[in-house]
Image 1 (cartoon, rainbow, N blue to C red):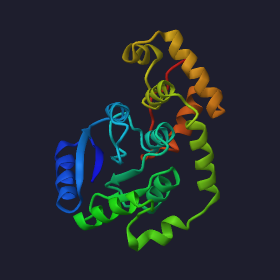
Image 2 (image 1 turned 90 degrees about the horizontal axis):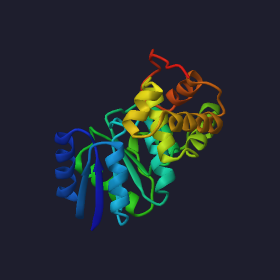
Image 3 (image 1 turned 60 degrees about the vertical axis):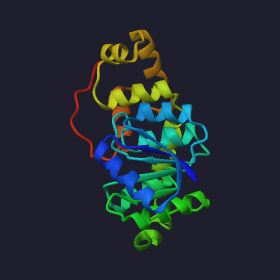
Image 4 (image 1 turned 90 degrees about the vertical axis):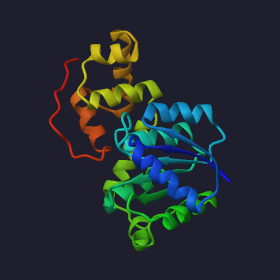
Length: 225
């Protein structure tokens, strides 16, 4: 009997996933969240959570960045990533950044149940057909990603939020308004982000952050200092 948090911003998929899980897997409670922030709040309110089922595309998640932050903030919590992507590179990076399992959204209920049971038993799980390709893959690029992920993991939760807004091209005043803090505080967070990521300007921050997102770099307006 496990307590789950299902984090996905699409209610229909959340319901379908919960139904699929309940047909083959025993749960004592299931909490639903629809954004990175609500997921963090739910995890703080439910420290006895056994598993987090995480969609990488939720608001505030910013691809792998959210996974890295969650891994840092809740180091003992098993995270099962549920994603529509079936690209090997995405799956490899998800596992490298600390997920315990990767379940494609095309998986059947039996596979989902197998993944959850494997993770609760302390094992890693990816679809059998690609397990060797995913778990035995090493490259220089992967090492660089892990180095960058370690830097991102140094960010506080508030600094992570500022980083997320920077990747979206927001101005300092917009960030300050949304986070209910002063522009001076935003600037202080940005300075700390520069230092921790080893960069000197906003453009470099976004370039680094985009290495850890699911989408290819796009042309976003770069705000001034």
